[in-house]
Image (cartoon, rainbow, N blue to C red; front, side, top):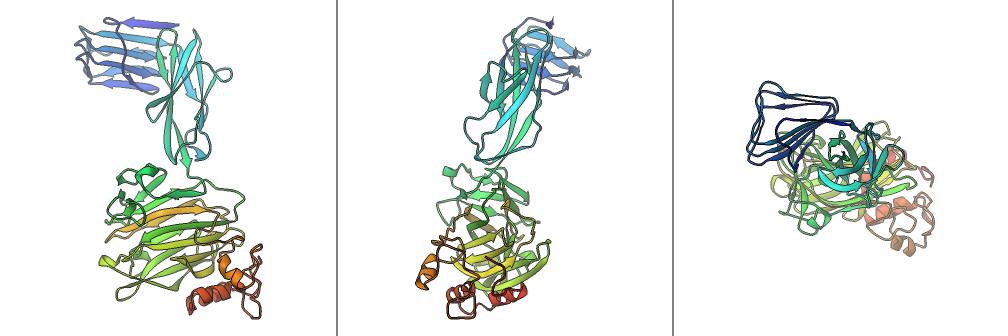
Length: 450
């Protein structure tokens, strides 16, 4: 049953204004042919001067009561107040999380104790995406997206209509869609990015400072992400849906980092439990440092022998390709710069980590840090690597080694060093930092085991 309280003349509705359990309409004027509906799942009340005039078409709909105070007036307009028995509430909690390869589904419990529900309209981020004509089961109405959604945050809301055209709305349901692996973004318009703030674009969050999508510089294409200078260093993060069953994950990207006098003032990267930074190493040069974790959010920084020339404000002159290989079985990681392994088998920050769940960058306060062409997934993006051991198949083949098993910790034929040690010393000769790193974590001939 619907009780209508006609104040002026009835009219046609065009605009829906959503309200919640108790809604107050305060000091509002409806006029000049304006059409509006105020939905109050509980109570609607007016406060101050609320005027309906000039041919406006206005409707208040609530499930409990409608209270019009002394400041309410209506003349020469169409106004209707209705108490309806319609109700609709989400059956799924807010903050639902889906992977970007999964179809989002949301459910609502809808009832009309004195009548029949005619339809349910589903809105995503304020845009109508579906109209349901019947429940899925009993009083439960479920909407499922026909295709997966890009990473990001989405708000769903249901509007229920009775046979008389009365409407009531649910409270919003927030859904978070996480990026799935393999993940690739180039920050281009073709990927769905627009110039301006990076925050909330395709799953990216800016936790501090400012970061934008820009067309001023790019490693590939025409656009990149730029962490802007400010009183606090900018921080950006992409969160991933955990992928089970993949023990090796590569995180590969291009950057123009800024070298700081210390790690705390340098561009810093976090690829899951791997952390590395770009630090001043002398006049006009920056060097990569890598964090050797102890698995309990502590450890120490290790310098590598990779250096790059600096430009204005200590930003790298050229784009640098950086790659982290994460081994979730052994809780170790390797770092490559421009395709060359520069340090291997450093410890994880957190040994409870079983999958890549985030990638983040922290910039600096003085100038911009830049990021482009980010890839994360289980395949080596640098070279053929059939056994995913982080060693180039061409090098293994040339040295008569197996491509079918992870043999990096076996002895290199005819020597007393491991295959991994032989490889890193051949592609990056004189890398004393790597030897120091191996010593620091107790790198032994057969430890960790393959």
